[in-house]
Length: 183
Image: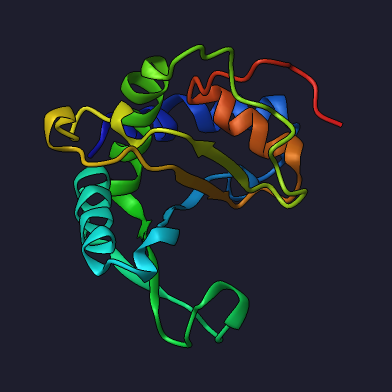
């Protein structure tokens, strides 16, 4: 069992139950999944770029990433239907908690000029999204073998019914937010 999952089951659940004033232990918010997405717009000319993005995303997540394909043709962007344009991976259960542990304790402190995550990046239903400009902040990526730094989107989906429950859950995992209030 991963370290964060043990901590969640032993301490965080009880703390959240008292903070959020919940009556039932099953109402306590939990993390359902983490989705990593890497869009590669230049991949329409060179398919090797998408293969490299899939490889990098697989190294970061510890799970095989898949290619994402366009749903419809857009002539202005010279995109045909079914053309590969990026990579994504969905993490659940043990791998999800291990990735979250590496993200909070190793990767986020390596972000250049980091001042904290924006607590307004919640969608109103308890899901948090963040963007990373350089995927080389993860220790699994060998900086010498990187051809180009790419951006990465990370979405953390929780079972919280509102933003307050989700922000309390992520703060209990020591997620570094810069402002304490959300609107």
